[in-house]
Image 1: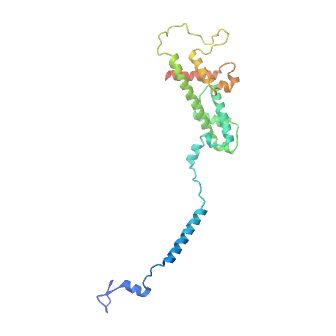
Image 2 (image 1 turned 60 degrees about the vertical axis):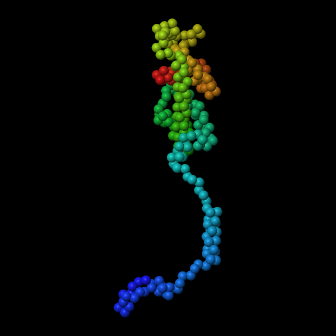
Amino acid sequence: MVLNSSPNNAGSLHDVLEDHHMKNHHPRPPNPDRLENLHQQAADESSTNEENKVVDPPKRSHSANRAASKTIGFYPHSWKDILEALKKKLPLGLVMDGTTSSCKTFIEKTVDDIGINNSYWDIYKCDMAIILWDDCATMWSEMKKAAQPIAASKFGILPSDIDNNNKVEDYNSVNEQGRTNNLIHDALGELCSMIFYKGDNALAKVFPNVFAEAIPEGAMALAASVLAAAIDK
């Protein structure tokens, strides 16, 4: 309702809604049959779209993909074989070098030394090197773990017989068979025996020719450094 302010109808009321209905007719209620038909058509179209819709698998984020590529399970079978072979050879390389490289140096050396050159290697060579580095780091950790009880049993804290020189042996002395005795302390010999000769995957069993005549100098140096770390701890 509005107030009509024209001069001829001053103060009269005018029904806007009624005027609209007179011009456009009253609204009609929807036809139930037509509504049902429209509803069925929409349902049919929705069902067809769902059936034809191709669901794309969720794409892995870049970070998730890079994390997976740092595990052997990520790679095809042929590359798994290569990595497993390298995992056996690299500890020997560390032992023969007699050094424990930094992660960065190790990765760079591995990438340069392995003779594989194709696009797949170019893409994943750094991640593969990290896998190999982690395996060597595990080896180092296991060696330290083996050295700790040996150090505890073989070295006392200020032992009472520290002035007893009867057991002192000079470096490069020879035993009864005339062989050089480089294991100046029996703790070093026991540790070398444990980490290089015992177990199915011991380096002496995997590479018998390398350890046939004697413990390699690099292996002895590595064992000595592990033993020293255990003593310091």
